Image (cartoon, rainbow, N blue to C red; front, side):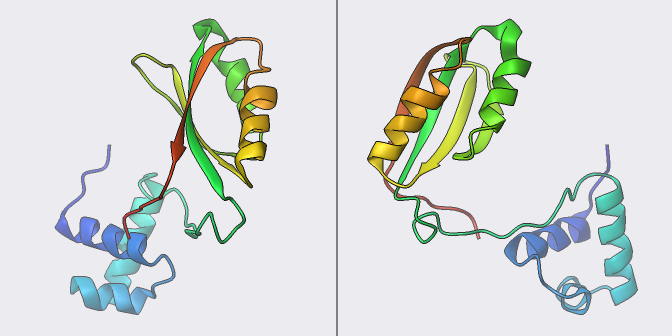
Length: 145
């Protein structure tokens, strides 16, 4: 496990705010040299703290007018098979194995309510080891900037 100091946390906060920020800008914000910023980012990447860079998008602007969290109860011994089948469904944006009343939580993005119904009833519930589902509609999304 990598130990992170205040500078590492400040660098990560800047990268989460804008993954395209330059090394020079990061160095200025956290008050270290450009070479120091570069070395720290390389160390954080090599240690697996930074796993990649991404773009945040607005689901509605992408045509996803219906989103939901879908909770699944599965036959526990079949997790690997269920996971592989769920990964093949393009509308599943995020998947988490959890503890509690349900075993898996999915974030599903669909073009509309009819498409969401198809995904849940025909794609997800068609997986034999899924015992039950519960769908919770998302009215608005908020994310940390």
